[in-house]
Length: 329
Image (cartoon, rainbow, N blue to C red; front, side, top):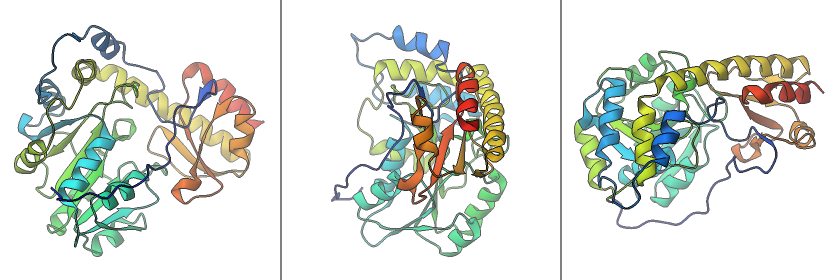
């Protein structure tokens, strides 16, 4: 771990809008997993949760068909990203991120004192630079672009001196073959960051886990504080790992709604990026203002370095007609 950290202000984020329809945060459009929600509500708050969140490690291992020793429970993907960059960054090391990307990548690297740079979204360009740490979202945020898992594995093998930190916060919404944790052992220079809050539709509970080879996972667990997850979060995470029906149904619904929004946006003259996630990125100056006037929040992407661009999450089924009407209007 770094002997010294360097405070940085938080990055800009979506979510928390007062508007009736909030498309600024990308969650399961079907809402919370009923099974996970019930588990959280029944959690025993009079006792300490497991100090290592071991039940989540077991549930995640069973879900992905990987050894439990490869799992590192964390209180959300953002916390897991922070842990990776603090554990493997530091003075004299260089972190490269494939942009445009989640603003916390820069913040966490700089907190660790790591030289940080954003490069293009081309994997070959990024790996050729041979940074100490390469961070990328898969699918990327905010673009929704996905890289096939096989291509990422090959890149890890070609660049053994680079640690790949792959943010799979939205991988459950992506096509099969995107995630690196679909049953095969991971290369030793790879850490995959997984979020449960988004796929279970429960952002108020911070839940996630890292996946890495056993030696690297043991190192990351060794620098975690005790009780990384609260009792309700741990109960929801364990139950949610088994609620694959809700996760898959939410992903299918998200794909349909993104396709409908893409068609409506393109029909209105917006420049729309193809998406493999549960959100769509479009260039449509003034769209955020017009949606706000109708009680719909979007994610202005100026903080990603994309002025005039907007990211819209897949809405709930009940909200889809209003969203399509607002886009078309």
